[in-house]
Length: 532
Image (cartoon, rainbow, N blue to C red; front, side, top):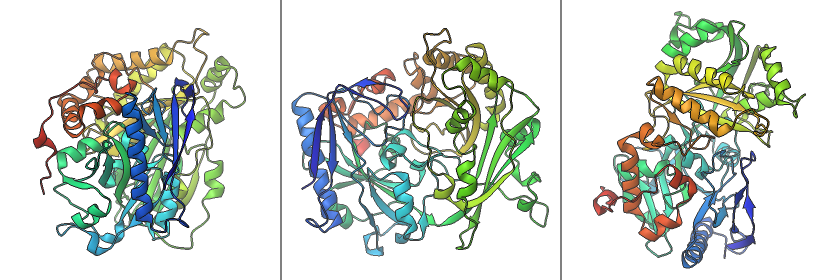
């Protein structure tokens, strides 16, 4: 049987020290040993029974229950004051055969994999590589669990790929303590697995596009995500260039996405004069220093081959891997003095570079070594509003601070997930990352900074979203309704129809209450019917 360690604690914190937050009990469940239970499927189903017993325990105590993986989020979205479950030891996985697929499936069995909730991106990449496969996209680093990634909408920067949740084709949820409370969700418009395999998961199947899209970015509140079925692809390489571009050219690319006409990387210009389209495009912006240039990162997708130069010597020493690492690297000499740090940013530009490397997705978006006090605020806007929004947010960061952090812009494809922050045809994610400061030293507050930024975008009539896993003034009045409109109510309707009243309460938390997504909606059985 799976074994759970039960720890009595008084507090819990995120990886980046954005707490601490109060906590009563922490659970850690480990799968039964393969020596005692040889079938991975049996070990998976055994773990589901164990989770249901923990849900029963929490229900009987009238307390909340919430799962988390790597504690990567900087908001308190993962936190539950009563009982939390650490998922990372639940990390088995399955591949599929043709006979496991639905008769109407358009997927290839060789590309489908079910990963248990605790698998981190790094583990998944290693396991997929053994099959000659790769994830389609990941975040800027690889330490998050797959369940955590999709719950908050981790986005990476795949312009034509989308966020992590966008290659998920099935969700195995535990929505209560009873035998019928394990469900498998997928789209009715694009089924993946057949009922015979779903029954092996001791689950009932619901094929329903609306329900699936609502649960995709479920904020940890649609039940316990036990397994995630993803569509992978063949291994590929990313050729990465980090260059300086004139500011107006970088902004033109950001605004117009006219990459076919960009001749700034001769190696990526075809014989007909048309340039290749990048897989990834990112602009680094130091708002404290204007030298007329921006540092820009391009990545281009290449066919996989065995003999390519080792990318790690370049990637290891690159400042331009993760924005938090970049800021911390610049300020490393003055970690205790934020004013000196700000002056350093004002009197310097981002380091000049001309980096080129090639590697797989997993090698390129590699380990993020920095762990400690940090903040990150991230807004999503239409790429056509990117320049205007960047100017507004940069001004706020200077006027309200100055803030010990710098900006970057990344670009992602629109998501079908109901509450994805990638709501625009091409979403420009404008992020400011930095180091936490002592708010008692007259430098303003992080929450106050976020509030001013929200107000500034509202006053400029720029539609926006915010990254669920990042810092924000989440109590800002009407914020979620402003960002998502009727979709917020739609999400609540699906949640209230799928979960019983007591499970809605059990899987809720302070974050959900702050953003008003815990609000009750009438249950509608029609919403959660299987449509195929």
